[in-house]
Image (cartoon, rainbow over all chains, first blue to last red; front, top):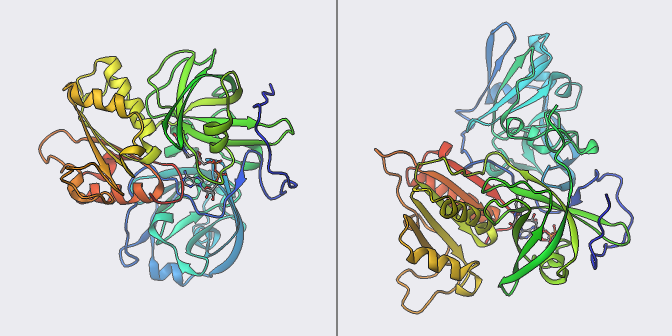
Length: 199
Length: 244
Ligand SMILES: Cc1cc2nc3c(=O)[nH]c(=O)nc-3n(C[C@H](O)[C@H](O)[C@H](O)COP(=O)(O)OP(=O)(O)OC[C@H]3O[C@@H](n4cnc5c(N)ncnc54)[C@H](O)[C@@H]3O)c2cc1C
């Protein structure tokens, strides 16, 4: 079906190959959150890790900072159709956090302060595809954007990049997270426009 | 597998101006089966040159098969909203899909008290909840706190006036940020703690829905937590990046 909206005109210009289908470029940094912003001190912050055998460990802020830190520039794609190009972050690759566990888990359920969760295949968290970030454009990450630390998985829609991250639960099965139980896609690839369940 | 939410053809059959820069658009959507109050649709516009743009808009009407209403505020320099407010004419068509959103949602069977906190165009999904409540004859106590720039910026002004006079367990508080009415006891200004009810410690927790531009939602959600509302009972929907 192609419905033409009479009188609606484009803005000219070639489309940018960095922008996935159905997305548009914004220069702001809009916010998508289900509830109030939690405010968490780095002194209190911890990242709880649970493996498939129920073994548990935790990483404090100081321990996180002792891991290898990377600076990188990526594009962000939100399911609400904005894309933000060339954002620069500092953070610890998730592999540096998970490799010690040497887990056989296939899936991860990521937990946040405030109760938010999101699910991903473990392979999408490893090999330089995901980070625990704490600096955006040279400044400490603001609480409204997920500070003190959030997950960043730029190749998936941004709801997978859990703000206020405080746990990674490794699992054999794929347990849907918060938005995923509320009708959003289980995987969320922006290049395939996997916005909602069934897309 | 969950079936895909399909794009549907929607034809503009009626419209009214809410303010000088905001318009309610009434669409005929033959295959629309209804929605829950608070949900939104994704709208897709396609120009004759093939250019397309998608944006999300909350459904402002109560659930009716075959029909829905959106209220759109024109954002200057925007691609989609100025078309919907200024250019789209009766009989013109667009595509939409939905209903979308399982969290920012109110349904008839919920009995607990509800607090709606809206800023600017963030009133749209809250109005759907109010309308749904009245349509369903629900007895859930509702209170709306609605912040607008001036009395000229209030959407649904007549309907809200009628509702506030009806004494049907619905309270409506209008607040102005820039300038109010002569005789207002509250000086104009952004939302402050005193504008919001305290959480009643022993009563059933109030379900709170906050909607508007991000700056408004951030501020309101923080004030609500300060007023004793449980973070888990506060649901937010954020429309855009700028404050207001
Ligand atoms: C779930 C959801 C529901 C929404 N419901 C409604 C609704 O019921 N009514 C409504 O009017 N809008 C609603 N919006 C906002 C809407 O989706 C668009 O963002 C808005 O109409 C602007 O689109 P545009 O194409 O005109 O502007 P764009 O071309 O996207 O942007 C143009 C300029 O305006 C700025 N801008 C973008 N959005 C906003 C904004 N909301 N406020 C201020 N500045 C902005 C941009 O940063 C940019 O500089 C909703 C958004 C979401 C995510």
